[in-house]
Amino acid sequence: MTLSPLHHAIGVFDSGVGGLTVLQALRRRLPHRDFVYLGDTARVPYGRKPPEMVIEFATGIADFLCGFGVEGLVVACNTASAVALPALVERAPVPVWGVIDPGVEAATRVTHSGSVGVIGTKGTIGSGAYQRRLEARGLRPWSQACPMLVHVVEEGLAESPEAELLVRQYLSGRPEIDTLILGCTHYPLLRPVIQRAVGESVTLVDSAEVTAETVSANFERPPRVIELGRVTHFVTGDPLAFAHTAAVIGGVDGEIIPLPVAELAGETTRR
Image 1 (cartoon, rainbow, N blue to C red):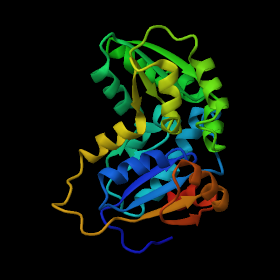
Image 2: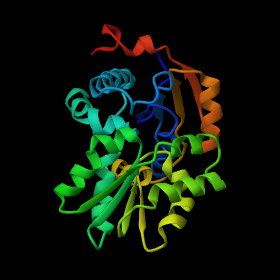
Image 3: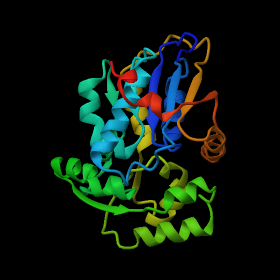
Image 4: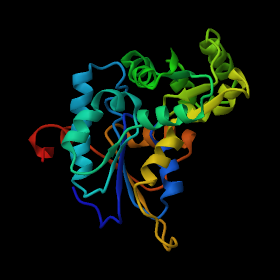
């Protein structure tokens, strides 16, 4: 599969549409670059799958995206970042960034008390990836899985009474914290609701924004942007369903190309 020539492209992937929040943050900081986004919607969610399977999915996707000559790879998925990042860093011929380490780094910078919370999917929280990194920095982590929040966002209910009720229920048992990491790429859409639940004294760390900050620091910006970069989306599931759900998150700017899962597996994509 070929695309028209790409201009300083960066590859981004997620198990679904949540990674679009990372893509949008990246485009705000690197507007002159092209992006190739892959949403593996045929195999979502990753969080319920064995780590070995997630690693296999992630390496196949990385091979596919690197085949387009991208200059960097962003794993815009907390589950894949938690379990597959070391394998991707070793395998890929370009720099690779996940969404977990930037979030931990940002939380370390802003916390005053050392008590940091993190919320995410069952897979991300169950992996302990955030908790281990926070503890390694001498911080006291508190974590909470919030499995229903992704569905709330994708149904367009981010500002609904249902979202308010769920968020308050999930966060009701928290200890005294001064920082909360939004450990799922869907959660930035719930930021106002979450902020109301925890109060203004708690700083929210948006994994999408801090990841984009980290990635963009590694690429030079031109003196001035003459032409905006473009985005190509590959989707392993139904493109119409992807576009519909993506519209809730902020829409899709660029072509959507269906991609059979078979093209991400086996020797055809191995480098």
